[in-house]
Length: 222
Ligand SMILES: C[S@@+](CC[C@H](N)C(=O)[O-])C[C@H]1O[C@@H](n2cnc3c(N)ncnc32)[C@H](O)[C@@H]1O
Image (cartoon, rainbow, N blue to C red):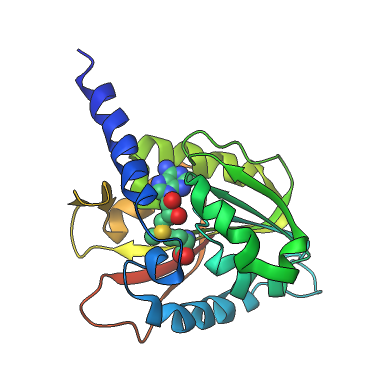
């Protein structure tokens, strides 16, 4: 009795402890792979631009949410250039504090800095055109990820999109004891997305990343 709850509590608290000790820099956000940030952001921009625009069925450019935003690496280079307002949510207060100076002048268009774990976060219903979730789903349990994705779907505006961009394993669930996360394979991830009642409308693998890191896939969901 209590073991699962205890394991879950330490899964989250160990991750919080890990991130509290990480430098609030682009390199810190990317586990020492700061050099791939431009390739990452350019790939994301090309992905997102397939959906944005003025025509029928296009995703609006009013408001985006950056989930597990850290210091706002993605907010700065991808979301603030494309959306009028951006909200950030992250569990590590020190990163959000760093986001203000890091984002600079354009950061005035940030609507909210939410310090909260995604497992507890309730995005405002109907607020967002795009909810961007990158390199953070491995910190959520299956059930919490499914529930969070359900809340994200409700938080979308008409024609809005939830985007997951993350590492995927070749097979199964690969735990990382260092940062207290897991890496899932595509089949598992697809099943969780399905359980959340979301549909994959587009999927790409990020090209030109170093060979030694996990494959990174981007999924557009609604
Ligand atoms: C690998 S970094 C990625 C940061 C950012 N998405 C990027 O790509 O630059 C992971 C981020 O997730 C945050 N994080 C870890 N567990 C979280 C949780 N349960 N809820 C919200 N954020 C979490 C960490 O504080 C950290 O900022």
